[in-house]
Image 1 (cartoon, rainbow, N blue to C red):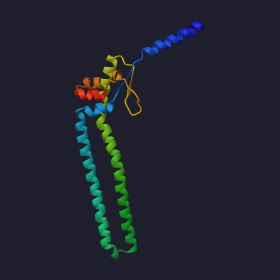
Image 2: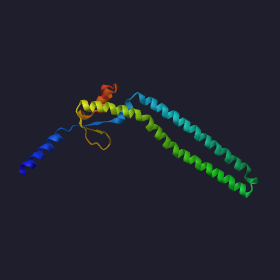
Image 3: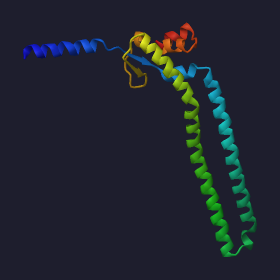
Length: 173
């Protein structure tokens, strides 16, 4: 029985010793990718489209409000209620459009970044396999310490064909 415990202990140690953990700063890599400029321009264009639609709704609201103010004295109580309900409905529509607009922007952003993340994933896979990493974690604010020799960010940038200056490499490490 004692021999079995010792054998399990050594198997556990050897399995742990074979594990190699690295890290990567995906957001930094994304920021250095030339394709990011295309994503930024797509997002700006989409934002402008949404702004145009919003401005049309706001203009329609303003016209309706001005028409209401101009004719308010001549409206019957029923017409006033009808016009006020129309104004409230249009106001609610504008607010809903603004809320949905931010959601639509986020969806468009994720859609535009998906090919970049896929490209990084392929490069990460190549680098991790070539350097015998068994696990790779993403660098974030929770990471307290990182030995630069286990940071795969620069090798992944190199795999993607993205050159960074020596100064940027030292900051990254």
